[in-house]
Amino acid sequence: MFNVNDIRQDFPILSRKVNGKPLVYLDNAATSQTPQQVMDVIVDYYSNYNANIHRGVHTLSQEATDLYEQARLKIQTHFNAQFSHEIIFTAGTTHSINIVASGFTSLLKKGDEIIVSALEHHSNIVPWQMLCERTGAILKVIPMSEDGELLMDVYKELLSEKTKLVFVNHISNALGTLNPIEYIIDQAHRVGAAVLIDGAQACPHLKPDVQKLDVDFYVTSAHKICGPTGVGMLYGKEAWLNKLPPYQGGGEMIDQVTFEKTTYANLPHKFEAGTPNISGGIAFGAALDYMNGIGFDNIHAYEQDLLHYATAQLLEIEGLKIYGTSKNKTSVISFNLKGIHPYDVGTILDKLGIAVRTGHHCAQPIMDFYKIPGTVRASFAFYNTKAEIDVLVEGIKKAKMMLS
Ligand code: C6P
Image (cartoon, rainbow, N blue to C red; front, top):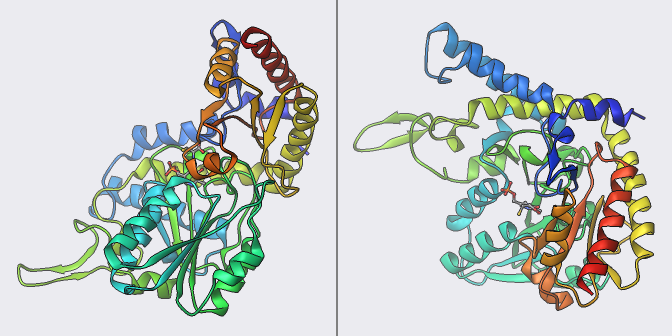
């Protein structure tokens, strides 16, 4: 295990005050904080290597290109992709999903079926609805239970030879449920459907192995894994990425351009039009180095301990209800206080220096399922402490007293 006090020294923001109180940052599912080591890489890039990549013969451009491509190799190794060109740098999870959804326009026909789950973030619903509008394909939904688990028997019934695509998140952002993606992928492949897994909430907590999972597409954002915002990854099996058309046209994604005809570059550049977020890509690699330095087994064990500690304490508060009670869940707790709007609880917690997210968490269908407007969501990272959870619990008690 690691020493959390040492780890916290890596995150300067954790020592700041908010509203005169020490910051208790429990909004890690929205975005994680950035360690000094990753910030240093960004400063180093702009101090020493800033140049456009893949374009110049000059030294700076070559050095920047090397750093960027080294980051791609780090990401390939981290996710155990077979080839580095199966890793496409994107602006984040949303962008990655849209690349795939757009690419499937020419591969689907009227009456084909697409399956998503009831636990999806809007990023994994809306692009598929738009794809259905373009193609006449039909969207089907795997329902969920009161505990926030997907109903696998219904999923099996939904699958047929009409199913062309299945999209499920690895971990739900609103409830923290860890979905049985191995089973979901295996069953989809039995009917010949491709699978995209949205790993935005999983990658901060575990290390997916895309070859072992045999997943067709896996997507994530760097900013939830101690990296910067505005950069992420689309992993796709080589055969699928070759089959999909480019998403955007522009510089760097071409082989030859004439006014009569353009041919496209090979992978990964086919999907990387324009000047990318170079420092972001390099910092994404550095963030994975940082997380791997701590170790995902250690991170998982520590966060599970925080989850159980917090759950036990929160359940002692009368009138507090937790949404998402699967046995397989990560360190996310969504809850409400009886008769009190989540926004009001969040506002009082903020006055006490505690950052949580309130609202529908970009997952309105989940809120509709529970017939609630939203929840308060506390999400813990490996740099949080039990002392911070104690501050949260006291804060909730105070909010309850003030708002009842
Ligand atoms: N969820 C949350 O507070 P982007 O914004 O592209 O980096 O990630 C979108 C996204 C997609 N899928 C899942 C499961 C997600 O959790 C998110 C981002 C944040 O829950 C911000 S809405």
